[in-house]
Amino acid sequence: MQSYEQWLAGCSGVQDSRPPMFLPFKIRGLELPNRVVVSPMAQYCATDGMPDDWHLVHYGHLALGEPASYIPK
Image (cartoon, rainbow, N blue to C red; front, side):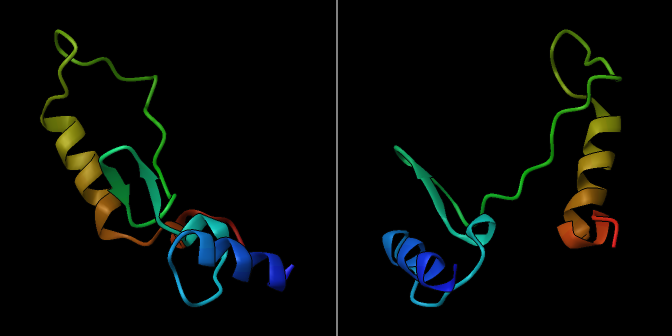
């Protein structure tokens, strides 16, 4: 597995071996530093399709934490 992760990291332009979820991801002109995402919330509705202050506070709060802190151990 380690040799595969090293190969995959090299394909992504990274020198060190790391789990695939922490490798950069590029689609056309957009490059993301990793593949960690927060899924959209289906239980709240936006106003005319636009997020409001509630979404700003919620996603801002998530941005302050580490993704690993949300994974049960």
